[in-house]
Image (cartoon, rainbow, N blue to C red):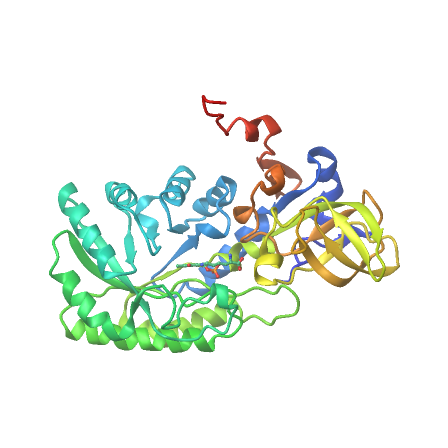
Length: 420
Ligand code: LLP
């Protein structure tokens, strides 16, 4: 799937499923996120088909996009969830994802979060350290519960992705080093309230090659054999998420190729496989729609100044991420080179430099592509800009799935102290 697969132009106008983007814009005003329900469903079903020969559970990584409409769409298809906080557990449960399909990752789970997850009897805790294990054991014992656990193993493999989203190097904060894994499992088996059931690994996000995955899973398979010979009953391997998407022209292995590689590395273990995809389900299923506020001619450059900013989509300023920028109406045949920027008072509020876009004027609509994952979830109201709303489309229908708050909503959250 390319960035434009689900947002094609017909008669020079961008559509999503059966609706023109401009029709949605008229009703809700820009900026807003727009998701295609069919795109999300198709991506999920591609994973399902790819893993159909294995005992596999897809646990969608909620952090990529945690809107209730997204979670409910996936819940309906049978998806589980990979969560990293109390908030994400609550979102998943509220959307109809059953607790026995929830795996709980994260490096600093608190006592309250662990108690809550235990009270729901979730499928698995992905434990990231020995102190976390000790806390889970203590809380489980006090609640008379048993926590099913896997250690997240840091396999010391370089994911060959952006440094800020690479997690499987020895120097990263994530997981238990593979060299210490056997000792960690020995300690776990001796603790009350703990049931050792699996091994977990996640080496990073936006991977464009299968080689680092294959290397990590090979090391994990060897570890499972060692752990079994140590007497542990390992029945689950959680292979994490991380398969990338095409933002520009990256060639990404298909979900089937990925699944075949997982099978090749792990099927001899006869374990249940958990996968935790986020970006590859949502990324190209969503766009950020914005309007041009001004076209400004600087000394050397022309600027397209948008009504969306880094507070709405932070990926370009945070990771130097590339997103295609496309005019919703392409009827002008002229391409121009622009710096595409937002309204926030920081130079970093730049979506693209020297980018070719169809000639645009104030009021024209612009789509920032591939924004369905790590877009809305990372938005803020910096500069007291209203939190960006979200829309989901299915066929000829659309629904506002997160509405734009009012200024009163934002300001009333502050409390003026009595001495003022
Ligand atoms: N499982 C775990 C334990 C994770 O930490 C993550 C993502 C995933 C699964 C899902 O990975 P995915 O399939 O989406 O690659 N904000 C960054 C991405 C951060 C990813 C964090 N972990 C961005 O905008 O690129």
